[in-house]
Image 1: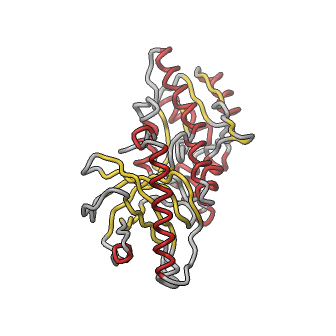
Image 2: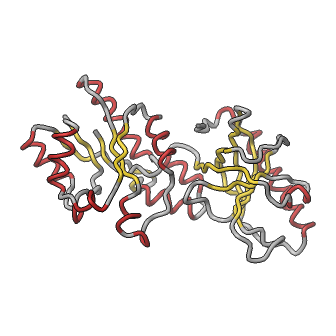
Image 3: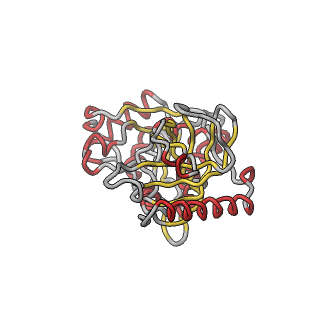
Length: 303
């Protein structure tokens, strides 16, 4: 078993998940993952809680893609938070789950007052008859791959850097809403997406792609994240994506939006004419990207 929060299921998470799957096959036993919902910090220190890269359904989907077939989602409660780490190991991991081996991140802490760590697991493993070890650390570009580092890259709009740490493109899921049809009036109809994820890339314009389940296809697109400053003042944040070769009505449908490459910052233009000219350039840049990189070869993770 491996235990952790696994937000985003980045390359480091994938390495340990696949290791546990392979190790269980060697031992002829079951491989499993334990994760928590909600994220412990959301319950214990909500003001300090991170904006998560993935919701629970996405997390389980990404965990399953590593070959892991069993995931135990533990409701994180105040009662669980008060459980001493030794009791958690003895009562839950050993008595209830009968673990043979356990792996956690080197910085992962569990139990009351964060008293449980790799050293405690190893010591109790020797006493109770199971093996424990720290997960391998995965580094990229001189730094450890972590959920915190990926979140910062996404928040800054560095979606290509985030993708290199995730081993996949950054994506969000959401429902297509019927908006004010401003894009249509400008000649560039858009899907206005109500986002399910807690974090989205920084305001700006991105080469993107949208998977529409009812069509069973992923379509190339260009996406604006921002407040539409040329059209509105003090508007709320919106995510609008213009599909390059698609015109059908998909209102109220759930879609998956992939952020592939950042093109530019969102800026306010003196007139809608200049805005339209810039949008045309953005569309051309996105179209050029997909001419050079076939959408079929980009390996988008679709639900």
